[in-house]
Amino acid sequence: MATILDIFNQDAFSAAALTGSITLVPNSYGRINELGLFAAEPVPTTSVIVLIENGVLNLLPTRPRGGPASFGTRGRQKPVSFVVPHIPHEDSVLATDVQNMLARTAGGDAGLETVLGFLNRKLITMRRKHAITLESLRMGAMKGVIRDSDGSVLLDLFAAFGVTEKVIDFVLGTGSTDVLGKCQDVTAHMEDNLLGETMTGVHALASPEWFRKFVAHASVKEAFKYYQSGPQILREDVRKGFTFGGITFEEYRGSASYMQEDGTTTAPQRFIPAGDVRFFPLGTTDTFTNYWAPPDFWGSVNQAPNGADAEVFVAPLEPKKFGKGMDIYTESNPLPLVKRPALLVRGTTSN
Image (tube, rainbow, N blue to C red; front, side):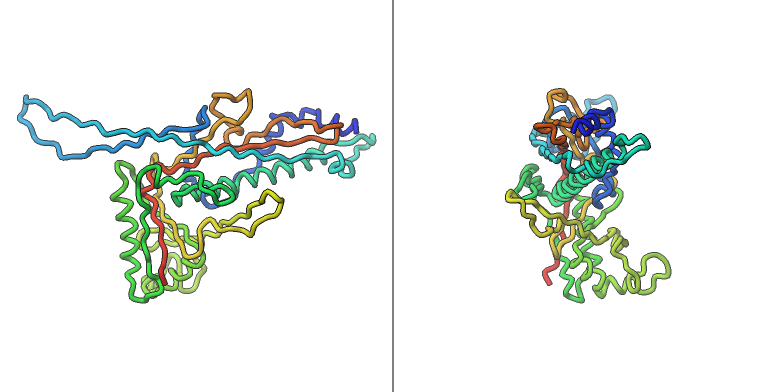
């Protein structure tokens, strides 16, 4: 037992080393992360305040040279506070977990590599749990309603910003539907609601059911019938993305299960329900922000997190009673926020 405890007390198991280990595991899970929509902004508090300003745009009158200029009018500002979700997670490494896995050196001493490798596998699993949780929160923000793992509402962005969700029925079960016109309705709605923001394009993440109906629609197939280059939707698998009507469409299959209080796990739940598609702008400057609050530790009070601790914080190992092993603690404090939810569009199909 003493040998095991000596191993855990090595520098390789310090908070800095463990944080470095978990940083080496990239957040590769999830399409939202890959798209890079949310700009990271560490904050020193556990809540953020966003000023909702209704700017006033009007035509400026002409004036004779040397005459008085017209006066600008101030927009009305409304501060709204949002609490940053706190997501702690615990695991442990027991002496019995590593006892028979210890590598032996020529001198017969226990080596560190196998023990550290076991701990790193624990950290990788914990890191991936934080990553899938972040993907779920970000997708919730892009749907306008952020939910906890059990489905309860954490934040309704539409209600907070006083806007109504835009829903467009593509009616894909009807062959005569003007699908191109529906796409133009999406982009036109976003352009009308930029309110000083900019965008370079529109992206769509679709459930498999909606995507299959979309690519099978007569007008979509006809549009690509004579294409000699680019995606060939009539004979290729284009689920990874193709552009139609100025919008890039791709199939999205993100899902996760939820562990309940009794230890049982629910069936995987999709982040985008069957029959839905979600549209959002690309190339914005200040619409998608991921705020990161400090971890719940004395040394981090009122300090904006930085470096590796910003996304996933790893605490120093904590000895278990009677020297049975060590507890591992990680936490994440993310608030993905869409500050212009009027730019989010939900697509459906009623047949």
